[in-house]
Figure 1 (cartoon, rainbow, N blue to C red):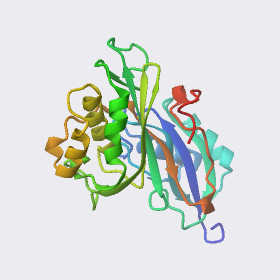
Figure 2 (cartoon, rainbow, N blue to C red; figure 1 turned 60 degrees about the horizontal axis):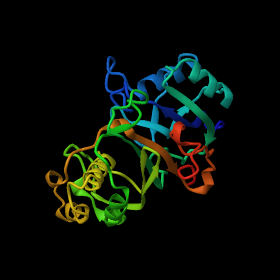
Figure 3 (cartoon, rainbow, N blue to C red; figure 1 turned 90 degrees about the vertical axis):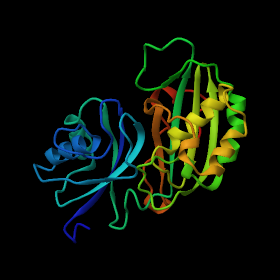
Amino acid sequence: MAAAGFFRIALGLEYKGARYRGFQRQGANVPSIQGHLENALSKVAGGAPVSILCAGRTDASVHSSGQVVHFDTTVERSLHAWIMGANMNLPGDISVTWAKVMPAHFHARFSAMARRYRYVIYNDPIRPAHMAEEVTWNHRPLNVARMREAALALVGTHDFSAFRATRCQAKSPIKTVHHLQLIEHGRFIVLDIRANAFLHHMVRNIAGVLMTIGAGERPLEWAREVLERGDRHSGGVTAHPYGLYLIQVDYPEEFELPQRYLGPHFLSGLPDVRQP
């Protein structure tokens, strides 16, 4: 690629999305992850413009501990310089975690085979004062066993029209959910889901249905009924974005991307949630 006049660089990225309108750049006065990162990388590149593409465009207030982006540049810098230089010019709630030179056929979005999210619920009658923007508080006692049983209906290849936002631009509502697990640790309930791709608001809508079932407000069969109806209006409320994290993007082994622990940070030391 150097002989062709450019380098393709992939970056790992983590961020707290609470004060941003989403990953994607939306305008000069709208705060976005993409806008901050492109500006920071441009400074490392000596003022040359940098345009990035990401594995998944997270929504407003959604976080990530495993986002992957790539950009092309004619500017030669060490990988250390891209990481440290970007972080020096980024706000404290966005951090580049690794960098790697990639072959020209790598694409952060189109080369991805699967994506994995975690939705973190804090289940307690009292509103938490700490991490209020990093977890979703649910005051109702949730029965995790009921949620696990209901979740089984959503694993596999299905038409997820009932779990997509009305503004979703995906060409097909048919997605394959590889796993959907619910892990309980103290007051935390972690919904861990991996799929080949996701529809707009799909994870938050699944979380809303499972929390409603866990609270005893709907029967176990409701998750399957919502799925089979294919109607978003029958699918209950969309859960809050604060507890949602993009934690991992899977690529073919040929790319050998760096691997870090599965986030978010405050869960990384818990033995029952740190394993792939």
